[in-house]
Length: 444
Ligand SMILES: Nc1nc2c(ncn2[C@@H]2O[C@H](COP(=O)(O)OP(=O)(O)O)[C@@H](O)[C@H]2O)c(=O)[nH]1
Ligand SMILES: [Mg+2]
Image (cartoon, rainbow, N blue to C red; front, side, top):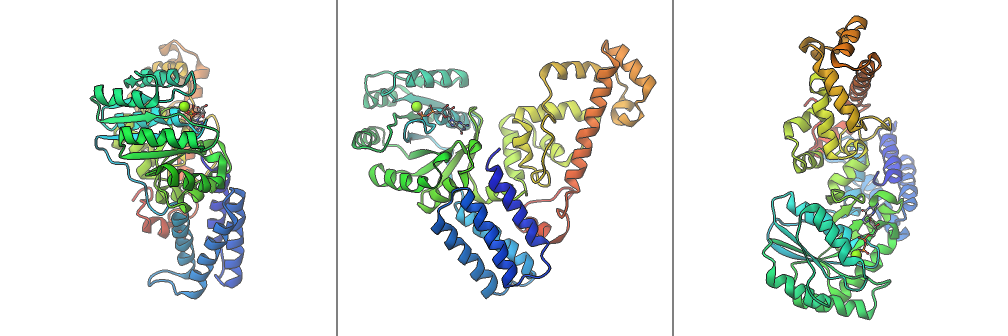
């Protein structure tokens, strides 16, 4: 999952504030120290942490809460808002209009993978896309992009001997709305790479030059972003590999300190593992308040209706809809990733195998479901021993599988109930903050 460690400790910090008896200087010091520790562990630059700490302390201790807010609520709100500023302030927009996008970055940062992800991102939003394979530096690079394009059913342009010619040829022949140019990396931003990118920039004249940076370089992201910006000029950053590092917080804070907008984050190796970056929503998810908007967007991407997605979030599980919902969820990605977007659930640990049902099993379960009466599907509670026998026989399966499905259904339902009644989610200062952030709580 993305920024697990930082998320866990931030959640604790927010809970701690909610549990404070009084908000006095000492309490503020303690909380801010907690925050510092969490951020330093995420490889955030020391001076940035110090700056953030004094800003928060100053605001809480030297100003009065706005009307209608208690000091505690004000503390939570301030912390949340400052974290948002810290991690990028506002979202880096990517417009859905015809444009040329050039990806730049060092070896192994994730450019080629990201070219595919970005291509998919535009494609599922209704744009036609072409990929341009301008990495002639590494022998296998073009083939890598061709394979990615093939899988996504996106054309890949690769005619020509050097990056500039390939780009020129693509510009001549391609008819797609969006052209994404993959480029070669180097070990460091040396003269050769700078020259190559500069030349490509001249030939392509791209609307977007996006620097691809792997999150595992942590706070070093700042220097790298500033260097690329100075030498080749970038319009934004894509931070990749946020799924596999404890240093992601450092990388995000560093990129935002460089004043370049982070436009996307890479959260896995698959082509769908790319998210438009919105610090507000990101922080909300990090501290355990989910990201309903992100969830609904994801649902739309894979063709799940908003209505169906909402039912999932609300945990409205009759056995009747159960199968449908599970397959909808599966289309949207691993449950662990979805869960962190659901308010209330996002702060919880999820049983690891929950909802990771194999396709084979799903098929069998469907047979079993077909042997149930409507009444049974509406209210699985009534399915006791004799009914279990009948259903097993009717579906040509075994009792144990019927019991399995019932047990499983109960487990999920119970989980959703706990999640919905999540501690402090509906009442108290945290709930009020969630509302202020414009997020709706379950059942509202
Ligand atoms: N876990 C994870 N791996 C990624 C991500 N983005 C890229 N990778 C992996 O990083 C490696 C290098 O990626 P590649 O696109 O070839 O980098 P390039 O040299 O910059 O083109 C590959 O193994 C990718 O699968 C990401 O967001 N998460
Ligand atoms: Mg590459």
